[in-house]
Length: 338
Ligand SMILES: NC(=O)c1ccc[n+]([C@@H]2O[C@H](COP(=O)([O-])OP(=O)(O)OC[C@H]3O[C@@H](n4cnc5c(N)ncnc54)[C@H](O)[C@@H]3O)[C@@H](O)[C@H]2O)c1
Image (tube, rainbow, N blue to C red):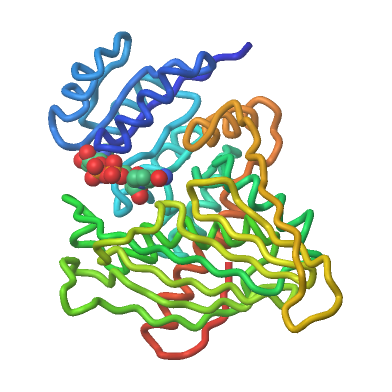
């Protein structure tokens, strides 16, 4: 079995989660950890009691000394482009936390840099490796007879420290990017256009827009409607959101926590048709969440197979975010161009 040398970049909350996931994987050797806050990587290495991992404050020095097979980019979103570009230019593949970039133009620049270097750039869309999500997608395929309506609701009062309090378009870029990617994953359809409104309720504690409603036209005649707020204390939805799907033969729902359910039409008379209830059995995935992303990335490095989240595909999810932002700014329906 081949083992890959990894350089972890970003020693914040998510960087620590990734350090543990890398440590649990026998196909990876973490050779270095970089954070541009002086001492932050060394402190994280000491706290997690990691051996054989060198701390760096400088990415260029770490890349030159370690020559890693891949860089895991877990920096704050404003640093994603610079870190991914430096890694690709140094000849390393990149697994990046979402969002790939802070604009579509810069995402395209990253894709071009990956092509030039001949190296894989994949964005970790960890929600795709949730057993409930996999089961919900399968229910839609097996029982609805097509898909015309998809909706997700996300309502949480999230009181963060750090970059999210200052970030523009914080809900759409940092959270709805998961939902928009999931809408593509569940439906197998691609975005065509969007109308979106962003806002902050009067009690908002965010600088950027923390709430939004959006309606996407997707291929196959699908309408995907999104409602969300990060400024909604009380009666929270799950972090996965609450989902509802309708097709000609029935409906499916998933609350993000319990097993998804479907109702399949069995009757052909009465005002409201009889339905049979079906409860999905979520698959026993060997690796879920970010551990699932990591396995898919490593498999792709080994086999050359195109992984989920590969940059040419992932830009379509990112394009949904920036089209929604543009629609909210202009008040117009906007075409989604990935
Ligand atoms: N998939 C998920 O469910 C999930 C959950 C949380 C966060 N995330 C993503 O993970 C990323 C990090 O989030 P976080 O909560 O750990 O943020 P954080 O602010 O806690 O940590 C980010 C770290 O990056 C470092 N950094 C910034 N610029 C850098 C640079 N140029 N070079 C090296 N280090 C740099 C900062 O000093 C900080 O330590 C974000 O992209 C976020 O969207 C994903």
